[in-house]
Length: 199
Image (cartoon, rainbow, N blue to C red; front, side, top):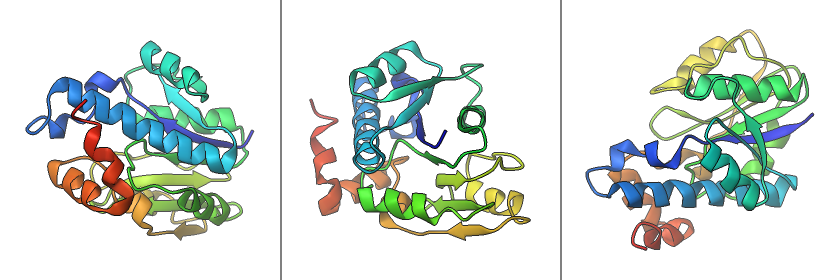
């Protein structure tokens, strides 16, 4: 089954590096808002977005906004385990994993990523700080290696297969730090984010 999926951790645990400028509730609101944006953008292209999570609140919220849910086998094991679950459900069909915190993401970004996945290979879209904002494939990767600097690890892990890299603003601009937030809201595509932490 072909899948475009968004792993989402509990909203209350997300965006810890924004704690110096936002309250816990504001960070949860930002996480929820950016996840909703990502899900909507994907759905506009694919017709359906899958959310992979181990959190009941996130699963209920995702269902309410029209996403389908993939439950993690072992909640709390992190992004690598969530990504493994996506590939398991895809069952050798094409898959694309997209981070939830991409405030400038557009439907065209998703289209380019999905259609850019090479046969019997992988697609990687880095974030500006060396992470991996999107990872897609038509087969199971040797391993996932999310975390700081994951883009180069993923390149190394997939080097024996065809790999396509795309660098697009929608994937480059994530939301991990106060400077990320400032640059996102300063861009016309991210101005919507400004009110999400002040409600």
